[in-house]
Length: 74
Image 1 (cartoon, rainbow, N blue to C red):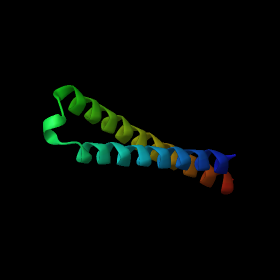
Image 2 (cartoon, rainbow, N blue to C red; image 1 turned 90 degrees about the horizontal axis):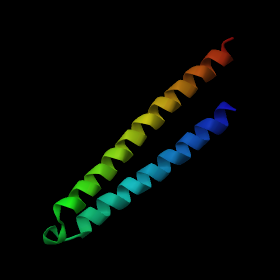
Image 3 (tube, rainbow, N blue to C red; image 1 turned 180 degrees about the horizontal axis):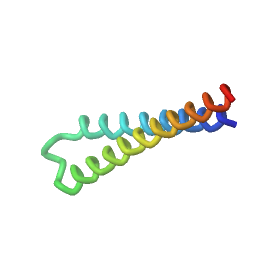
Image 4 (cartoon, helix red, strand yellow; image 1 turned 90 degrees about the vertical axis):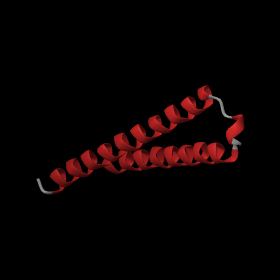
């Protein structure tokens, strides 16, 4: 069961990384003159959400690894 949850967390992490790369590439591709404050704020919010997702996945993987180690050494 731990492996299935860990693989799911890794899959979500990959999706978040791809989302971050897409947002970063879109921001780099758009001309600075074409970006208004709402667009910049939206991209910043999206990147902040992705960073929060990275943190949650890291904590989840650490907790799963800890429970796995506890079960191994019982």
